[in-house]
Image (tube, rainbow over all chains, first blue to last red; front, side, top):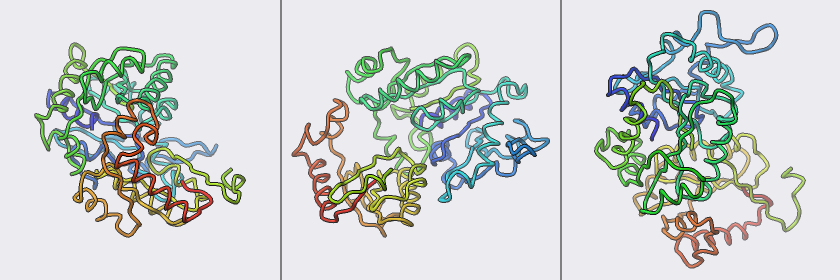
Length: 249
Length: 132
């Protein structure tokens, strides 16, 4: 919900926005307002091939610009959504070409001049796995969403440690999420051992949007959570445009 | 490993990570509990998990964090073919989570914990070798 809302808010502020979805589970398309029909099992399936050495490579002529032009879906507010794929019953082997193509495309994004002035918002699945495997090399800022529970705090600490251990990785910032009580922000900071840069309240309107499978901005753009995400986006976008953000929780 | 753990009278309970990646790789369970919250995303993930797991084992759907009959109906509409166990949204369970405590220790008499205890007793009667 946070990544999709942030992407659309950035677009409304005049940025060209590329949203990057490497979560094998559905979710981001809906939070962008595209509905579940936008989830494709293997969107980049014909963009990669195996070379003679058996290794995956992008097909000739396919780079970040062409991949976005050919395979990205256009969400409300003009946000471009590029997905790695959604896990089918047959497992990841069935969508391996799409996953490989996506991984190679995002690794070429930082050098693609076409996207130099674009805002990029990545949505990583919960947990440290994708952060450890460098699925968001475009990210200059990692926002780690932390709920005021022990489990969430422990996961956040691991994700932060993984990202910070990588040379050249971007800034890591923590955001308290689903804050319900006045003491929750302090509790999150105590549990993770560092200050947070923002807080998103527990919000019944978010629950309603998630129940309906709708984007928060379409369901209630003035909800407390939407306003909190707006403040966060404005803070990140002040000064230099945010060229890359990724969230992991 | 699950196969090696199999012993008469022993229950093996695996807590898989969210999503269906682990379900795809796990075909050793005698019973699969698919947890679904009343959101479109959660129900869709549970539907996929139930579809995959159902090829190898019976599936019981846990309708989790439901606030009323309407929530149950939303889940039942998609997963109604499976046996459904309802666990209501329970402030005490949320409080236990915040405190890092086991719900059964923190609030053993709460509605949510009683629902889980009832589920465990039913699972015991089914006597599976492994539940995931």
